Amino acid sequence: MRGLTGKSVIVTGASSGIGRATAARLLEEGAQVLGADLSPSADRPASDGSSDAWAFIRVDVSDESSVAAMVAEGVSLFGRIDGVVNAAGVAGGGAVHMVDAAEWRRVIDVNLFGTFLVAKHVITQMLGQELVDGARGSVVTIASIEGIEGTAGGSAYSASKGGVVILTKNMAIDYAGRGIRVNSVCPGFIDTPMTANIFGLDGMETPRHDIIKEHKLGRFGEPEEIASAACFLLSSDASFVTGHSLIVDGGYTAGRDHGVTEMLGLAGP
Ligand SMILES: NC(=O)c1ccc[n+]([C@@H]2O[C@H](COP(=O)([O-])OP(=O)(O)OC[C@H]3O[C@@H](n4cnc5c(N)ncnc54)[C@H](O)[C@@H]3O)[C@@H](O)[C@H]2O)c1
Image (cartoon, rainbow, N blue to C red; front, side, top):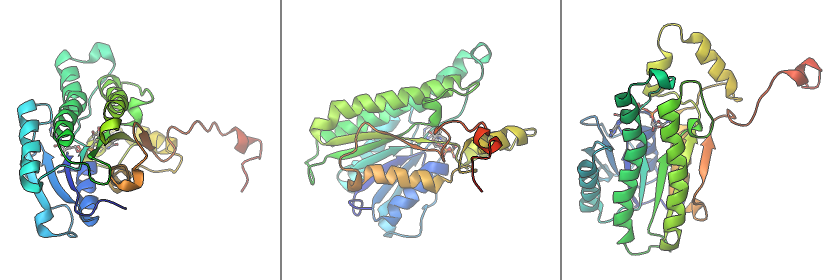
């Protein structure tokens, strides 16, 4: 991908799943990466790239002083912040009459308020930076297909991700004229610890099978397949892309297949 070599990027949620795969891909592309996560440490996620291109800081994205310290650390290490991927997130929900107010707040706090705080502090830094090749920076949020379509029991999670989708579009409008692009990736179901924790539970074989069928490509996605979409949006290959929600879902939201063409013999071999 063009325009990632030597760029400095913060990746939150970098200890696991999509964030970790994104940090690894960025290092492979020659970027400098400050990984950040609530977990206290993370190994260097890739063997490629120079050894001083990776640093890690503990962050709680729902705590403003912690987010401010993360951005200050990125600036102190790299001199500027060219990009951010906010992959920190939590699952949670249920039918609304079953959801404790505290659980609702926890999910919104990390997924939506955290996205706001990370964007706020990174964009504040970017606005003070010189333009490089006409750009000050690129912000990538991680939303979800569950921010676009409803899912039974989605409630807090879907609300948080729907919020991320529209916040991303609003930020794209606010900062386009100042050299900052803002886009989101909307993954389908991806094979990470987040989904393993849910679909590894007893009795989950049938829902898991149904969900796999909804992905027309017939499988869960891999974190590396979301990482490549995030890196594309960060890169100068996406220099004319802003305010976009890039759906990477193996066809989950493409539409329905009720088996009618097959029944009529029109599906082909
Ligand atoms: N896995 C999927 O199917 C899927 C689908 C759509 C969207 N997403 C989104 O992608 C993102 C990454 O998910 P994942 O599947 O890699 O999950 P994951 O659980 O593997 O990783 C999430 C990471 O976020 C960190 N985190 C949680 N709360 C935090 C906080 N307050 N501050 C900082 N870090 C925090 C966790 O420690 C963890 O390392 C999330 O926003 C998730 O909602 C995941």
